[in-house]
Image (tube, rainbow, N blue to C red; front, side, top):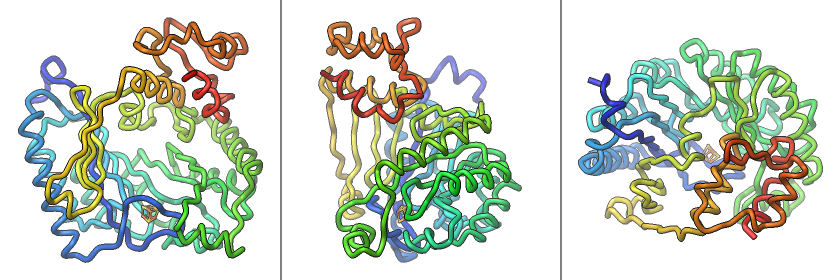
Length: 374
Ligand code: SF4
């Protein structure tokens, strides 16, 4: 059935937002919360309803290249709940046989039964929220797992899945370059193929924010964050990974195709609360609360030509895809003195009309990008 799809249908990615978590981490400002079984069941029903209803308009035109269950913590779903949503997607859309299918999972909610079910339902990539392998830091930021549990669940996951990604956080109290490189080494020795490195961000009104104000937690200074991140980046690249996006490292062939679609401004459908979609040049965002989502509230956003250009520059320069100069409609970079200067200094590279940021300057990307906006 899928043989001729390529010629007939356009590619699309699907994102499913699972907002539930077993417990709120102390640094978390995402739209996620603890829920009862009844609330989860209701949400699964709403998700399936949204998938069915939106598929009616688009499934003839599109076939699915990537599926991504993010959160929150998708691994808190029972195998039956996960199967209900996944089966709905497969019933409503044509999905390529080689589609990338990622599930975000936390060590505390990974079980052998869930791993088996995910495998059976065509999941072929796991993104595991390890964050750190230091027990003291895990406790400080309110994670539910220990170092021992993280390693045990990772080994279990690797028995069934080749393509496993792990998240690490940079900026934790007392963290050193040596420590985080040691953690990365342990993850790589267990066959991890992709690592996402996030900076610890402190949002107002989170428990971590108050812990810092009360002197109970001391994040790394900005200077130490940069030094620690750079050591980790060097370590991962020396180990053979490519830094294909500011925060993401992968062995060749293990880049996240789902995220590459976002960064190249491909089309995608987002299901669930707060999920975004980009289809036919139009962006929409689902309601942020279950009550409003149940009522089908959606916000549409239209970007001006200038905002579109800014998005192309920003997304392109944050990863190795870059952006095409000829795709810019409202911003003339040839008139921007920074542009020529950055090219001259080798900070930006231009090849065949595509502009990329030299990865050595990723840490300056915010300043570079804002200077290009003029
Ligand atoms: S698991 Fe992730 S989404 Fe859930 S509370 Fe922790 S940081 Fe937030």
